[in-house]
Length: 410
Image 1: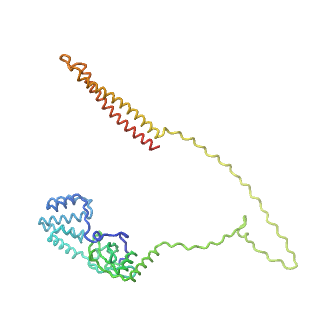
Image 2 (image 1 turned 90 degrees about the vertical axis):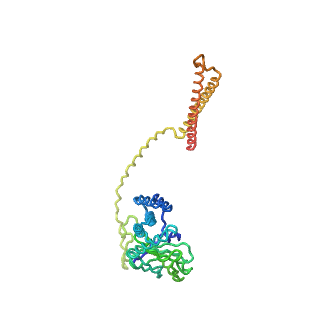
């Protein structure tokens, strides 16, 4: 008999549709997604080709593999290849025994074929779940029948009457009976006020796939929880929490310290009293105190010389801020010179262009040398203006960036 219970996702509200209905099939693999679209468009051969390519990917996740096997069986069934479709449905059911296609994903004959393969699987691997029973101390017991050797755990989805979200609790399974606590004090208190709990039971295999389910999110099992039973369960859980909390050590009385005479052993600190002398006799004189030799002189070592003071570190070069400010200023000056050169080039180009229109182009049969010079001034001045403008913009932008960084670092 398995004992113990592990809370799965404690203090986390689990949505009903996500927790209890058909497992979500993540659309993450591109080939599987493309096969889904081809299946919806009726291109079954194209969908099968996409699924064959996706099936070779070792990085397929379990939800993607479930979707792949469903689409493969659905495409083969739609193409009339029923034997291969049943083989694909067998692979699907072995991976996800309680798989149900969406409302618009399968025709009635296809659903019937998948149902027959599920029935065949249940004959060989099926598990039956009984109703849950309450025991004192927040303990729930569920009896199992059938192929219980395939059941690794039992997940109980529980909520108080009137609540909306279910909370999942996992109990380790082993044998025909699963027994464990539902360790949630607040849940028991709400169940005691409402009069009961709604439960959905799921038996899961070692791969954490559901192999049997009793109850649904909309039609759960009803478990009556009287107020006194709920109060006893909550108190039992609180007692377990107190027992598991660390216990502080009890304070220990410390005896008062015994002050001993300095320079004496402990036996001499409290000397025994001598008995009084008999009457008529004189008290003997007290014995002189024992002579104590003075302790030998202790040589005091000479103080160690102080460690040498390290020489001051050499000053580093100019600070980064000064370099940035100086570099930015210099680049602004370069930008100014480039702007002047650009202005000169523009003036030269404009003059050459204007004079070329009033100067005769030909001197006899040849082009006038002066005209050639004016055209060269026009073109050269334009090129100079463009290059100077680019240099002025680049130097000015870099100089501005250095100045901003210098002021920020300062």
